[in-house]
Length: 252
Image (cartoon, rainbow, N blue to C red; front, side, top):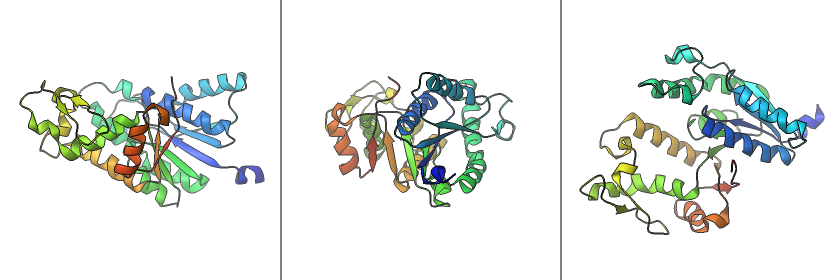
């Protein structure tokens, strides 16, 4: 309809884990409450999590318009058992990487969806780094969604850059994370081992792809608010040169 063509349409593509799905739904609610046509992309076994919440919201009149688009989940192609569509079900050794592979296989369905529906914007989870290039094929801006704080995002970029964990003698010896607005200490035991090794591990490759896709994207949506961590909002935008919209907190 003409009204649909004129209405801003944003597609949301959450990572298939409840810790990512629930805050994405809450962000979609913020958009919908402001008159945006919001579509959440999910899979058959994850869609009910969204549809129940949307139906409950409609019942009490809090949701304007949120649609659900269901993609087929490629469990078999990724080497996962049928019915394993959520990261919470992929806890056995070796399943974690297969689950990320399944996410990459969703690329073709996402590109088909964008080609046919032409949303004005794609908000895709940080764990879909390829979504930046996919959206660019159709001149659709991609926003990266993080469910975490600005301070955590700053640490995530600064620690690999300065590698302060190399200058302590044990996993339990505290060190200061350099260049941050405050003195923040941590230990090697609190950092993922795959990030600290000199080998180019799959974890490091994945983290690098995520960061590269953020830089190439239109910007980042952050689950925080400015007055909670103003120094880190400034550091993230000015020192780390990231374009960010701080729209939280959601899911409290």
